[in-house]
Length: 456
Ligand code: KET
Image 1 (tube, helix red, strand yellow):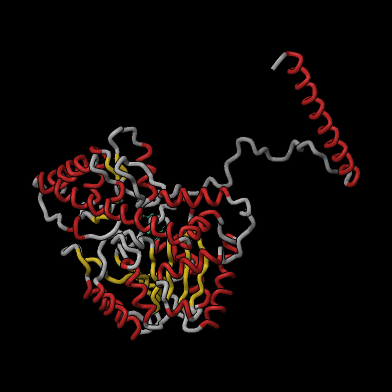
Image 2 (image 1 turned 120 degrees about the vertical axis):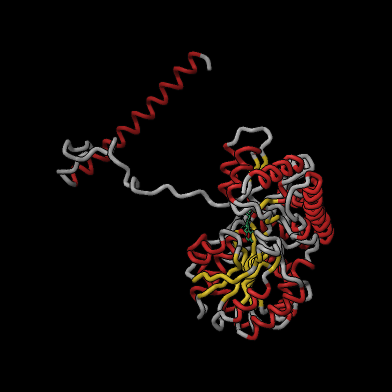
């Protein structure tokens, strides 16, 4: 800025401040005349805020989240060889986050469409998105959809869908107990408890066989009270990577229906387990096909790579269309005071892709490529441990399904691997296979070998 210009700039700024000050003093003098005792200058006896203790000083430091806290620790590590296998987020062979091509395309279409506006969505979200999401999970030919028995609302990704669904149940359903698998995604008990439900566990995983404890599962669900809610992972169980077979699902269905237990599906990985959207929805469709009721929380975080866009849907399948209408009206009462209505951008991306057959096809190919890369990481890690002669049976690495391997490493071994090898995972020994690449596998195999042979 030239000198003359600068002087002018400061003078006019000075003038503005003086005008503002005179406005303020006019205003305060009016106020003072209204109330002769009031004054703007602090009284000498009034306590000073500067230096006094915070009103929040008694607040305790909360622990980091057991999953997202791993990323916090990872970010603090300056090592160039560090690897984050904590949070379930897909990475490319180069270790980079991936935005799907089809998502980029959909975004271009949206940005270039001048008719698009940023108005509020309805409380229930984008109607197209809701219809297409229900079709994606229940199948295009679903009788429940044709009979208008499904109430679907757009929510804030999988977590928000679980949260809205469970608060709806806490307010409107007679049974407050929800059975969740042992173990399960660490956020489940927190979401359900805060919504007003009472959390109980059913046996799910057998550490001895590293497989399903099917007997324990059936026993625990048999002794659950009539009408209790049961949380089921639709596919790619997190953290174990162990799913029931289709025959086992059928047995679970028969038992649950005979006891009037209410299924609440968490579908965070549709398409990620097998690479097929239909195959990964079979468990849900089995339950819907019998005409009974259920809830399903869907997330597009993983299968469309829309993590930060927070796109998901909650569907409640009802016995009749008039019940579905009333259910939807109650869902609106849950959502409105919570966040009013959901964001428009992510849901528009999903709707654009799902309603265009070419883009939908492109999505399925990109999704399959992600699932296949994860499966190939399983094979490579298994081979690398065999090669090193690492003690133990590691076949569960190739048997488990989905984004994670539940390694069986204990928390001391996990701590050791972070400290000595800069490899980060959750304390229960879960690793995100999607965070691995051919480049990082030898390093991980070395770390596991050292942990297993050195730390008990
Ligand atoms: N359900 C399950 C089973 C699940 O693993 C996740 C996320 C979610 C729901 C919620 O995802 P959302 O982003 O709200 O659509 N799991 C991974 C991320 C996280 O913990 O937030 C994870 O387990 O690493």
